[in-house]
Length: 180
Length: 101
Image (tube, rainbow over all chains, first blue to last red; front, top):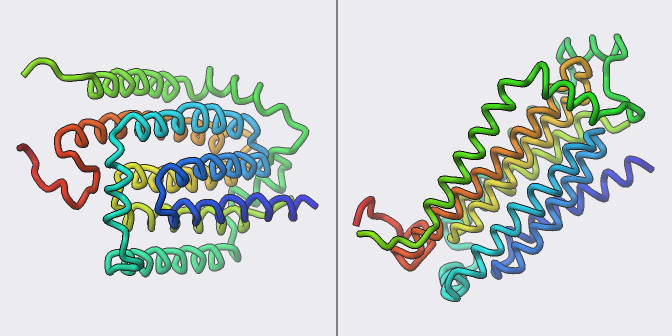
């Protein structure tokens, strides 16, 4: 049952990602991007990372996607026309090359995964033997909060300053320039 | 219990779809979406490996960091795209060839 649900979410994510790439209409592709992000949040839950899944929905769907749709709708109508003109030829040469390149990458990575499967890293087998893997009954969020405030305090502060700097920079870049 | 291999294969597929979007699309917003796909594939890997690390919770914590980084990257990237559009009247990366005027 769990495996069937996992396959359903994976198929949803990959299928709509393929549609995002294949569609010519940017607005539809952006709305399908919603579906991909939700399905990815579902896959995170299968890896027992519930807080990451909630953060994914809140940050991506609530922030990033709204930002993208804003940028898309607020900019000129010519953006749509621009896209449709440039990709009118089906499978022109650059498309073909990048398809080849990404399929090559896919084959290389899947081959690597299959080769890797036989000798699992030692820390994983040790943790499995010591019963130190995350179980579905664990209280993840409490543990994450404790880790954030103790062991990972420095990266947490650095990322906060970084986010503040990035948001100030974005606001500065996107304001209307009056001065020469 | 779903094995690690399932997650790795799904994230490899998503990575390649994102790579294709980055290489083939001629719209800067869609290229940004492709970069988001790649980052999401990386986050899926982090989370899948993080299940075996209960002592440090490294995978989940760095997955959260990666989500924050992606959000910051999108904010700055969209601001840059809007500026480029204002200046060149196109967001096709192939037409943007000048560094400064």
